[in-house]
Image (cartoon, rainbow, N blue to C red; front, side):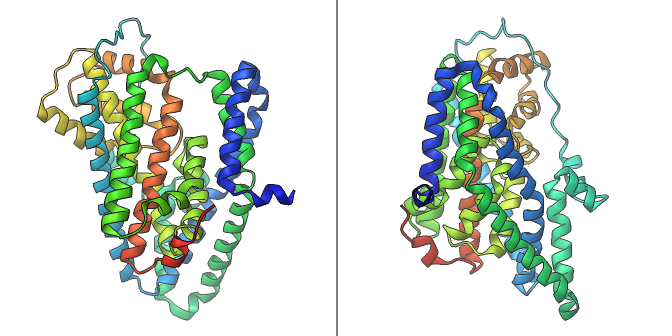
Length: 413
């Protein structure tokens, strides 16, 4: 047993994923017999997301000591999230224009799939203010939870010693939730094993062959954005930090993102990596990461942009520079309304494809075509979303003086 725990967690997760692929390919459809293991692991993670976000955010705000600092942190966070999303969609559109993934693709035989309408931005913004904070927690409405936690944390700061008992309770609660998160992380290899085995057994490792160029464009875009935007621009040039050490520190969260395809489900692991591996103080990790899991969708923006151009190419719709700019703008807005759950972006593409004149029937045909291949692509874009969250958190922590350089620079095995 000691030997097991002496192996680095990321190695255990990666090994489990490889074994899962082998089992899935060899067992085929029969692998659904162990699907409950992966579902149980996801339930364990989701169990802690809401209380973890709430108590750590309140505790983090209290630790600031000055409510005005929250404004600086918030502005920098939102600005950087917006910039990285715009860069991601720009990379995606450029790759789609160069690689032409939709050229020669025949969608006439595809059975249309009904497309859910994107949530209007006004409705999305209105939902930030909860009618009932307890109901918002029960529903897992992260933005509403963040809003109420911000109000509670600021109010505790303003009432001084009178709020100390509640502040101490929140601090203890944050430590307790982080301890539970550590316990759940030890089960991550088993959860990842079952999730990857199920995917390999039901979809098959060759599931991407029929949409190879599209998948290649997404993969290249993912690598380009992570290496250029987060590795070179943010880590190396803006912060003077080692990109290699950043990616090594973030790998546990990125591996879990690949397994779960959910930024929200990966949030507890992301917060643990941020504080233990990347030197990000709780005051930043508890604020920036939950917000990022909700509104920062670099991977989704890149993916939706590529698929929109793919659809236009498949239906021989010529796109002008104005069309590309329109796609970039609408994709940025749509990505903010994307739920942090597997496959959510599939049903938000209609708003972007509508912007370039594609008909509802064409939109449905595109979604129907990629639906069977979406899960593997979803895994890639979730890794990009989570990696982006951790990168922005590292930058904000540096700017706010809430960064431990020694913890960041520790060697990782």
